[in-house]
Image 1 (cartoon, rainbow, N blue to C red):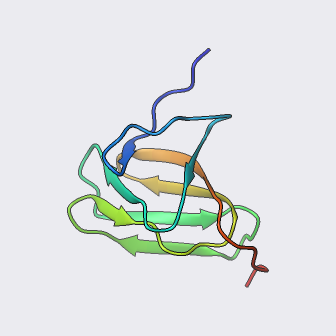
Image 2 (image 1 turned 180 degrees about the horizontal axis):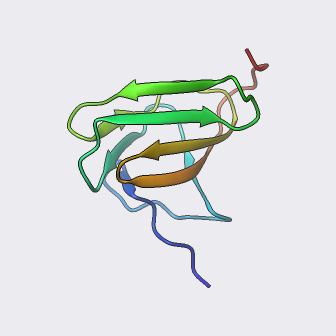
Length: 91
């Protein structure tokens, strides 16, 4: 069974969903298919590392996040993402 597509594009392209997640890198531009004003980014390895982010025009530029799995939640839908960057301990 093929996984559902991500509720966003990355740098103008539909991202591949591998093992249920999309890989993001610092500087990627994420544009949600449906209007979104607020997203919640939750670092799954660290229960207290949750950020509420206000975005414009349903677009978010990925900041320099520590390597790991994140839940990106918004009104357009939720998606598991994997970030490959640098390691950092939980806050």
